[in-house]
View 1 (cartoon, rainbow, N blue to C red):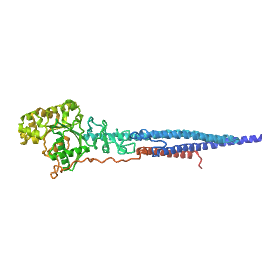
View 2 (view 1 turned 135 degrees about the horizontal axis):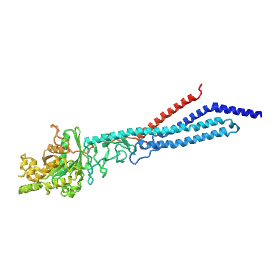
View 3 (view 1 turned 60 degrees about the vertical axis):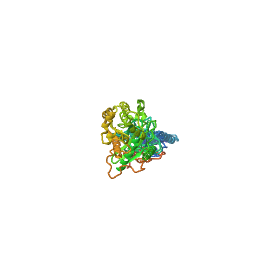
View 4 (view 1 turned 45 degrees about the vertical axis):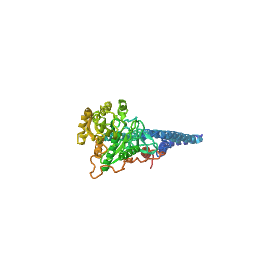
Length: 572
């Protein structure tokens, strides 16, 4: 009986000491330790997820079809879910395992389990109570993700809006026009499709947006600029409507469509090549540059120049719809143009249906009206037999009245929203070297006004119509011996290029055999960026930002734990 009472007294003493003296401190230490353990477990898995630079790992980054989306739009939450999906079950299982081990050790180990109840309860209560700071930690981490995402997205949105506005101002200030030069398309291009120089992937929406503000990251890892001022014009561009290749500086330099309007055999092709030769000479004289966009056009030009030098005639233009002869011109200062010289066969102007197929007329604000003087009925009637023989033996003549040709074009232009209004119209009277050898053309040789002469030979109504539809009209008589400076001046004026400042001591005509090349007037975009096996730099920076915030949060939690421990435990 005494032994039982003694044992009971010992039990009561142990319970008193356990619950009154030991329990508060053991519970506090366990609570703090369990919370720190949960935080450390979370931090280890977060570090493993967020510090990884490979696309595989705890939170894999799948390869996109074209380009990666901005990290903060999707991947940041995939990372959060990957960490939470791993950490929450892990902490739960470890806590449950610890409770099971403590129960088996302190309560189910035999008779002495009756004496260890306070210690078991303090340890288990501390572990269970640690769920409260663990939940608070989880909420804080979720808030941290939200704060990082909100701050990053706010900065991203500001950059997107600013860059978009800058590009719009750049396009508006430079009056940048983008159109397709390819037959059966001729569409206006709002945004070309750009090709990645690394893998050849086509990017249809390479603008500040969901793929990034300053750069998009291609699926191959190459970083591509999102605006023209940032260098997007250095990428290969394609028409989004037909897929045809566009000039290399599209978007940075204004495209100037220049339709050559005239009937069959009016001399459009001859004047076009004479104009390119004169413009090339003028660009060289002022230390500018002129280059063909397509190699085939450079070859056609070289062949035409050789034919002129031999005194021959150019072959008739084929009946198919034309691919624009694209000429990239850069003069000192900011005088830059990509000229689309449209030279269709004259038959395309002989009917309303044929003119309707020339959709490039919808976009331009300038045109060249090429007049074959020997196609004018009044001129043909005035020729003597000898003059007619000279003319027919030297050049083919158009059978289409130029007044009818222009009227069909103007009727088509009136369907535009601006009613076909043109800023500049150049009227070119061809074959003047033959015309001046006739009686009716002799006044031109004596310096007669070309506009007045056209009115006298039956084009008075046409001249007055042009004055109504165009802001400015200029006239030029052209032949094989026409001064190249005059030709260059007219072509520069109609295309908006200031070409009248050539140095007097520089050659006014190109050297024999000198042909513009096709060398690009811009350097290609370099292939830079991470390998496709590594996450984009923007993803890594975003992960590091989250990890930095998590580190700060962990330091704050540890500091709070030390403060609580210092307040609750008797350190002396």
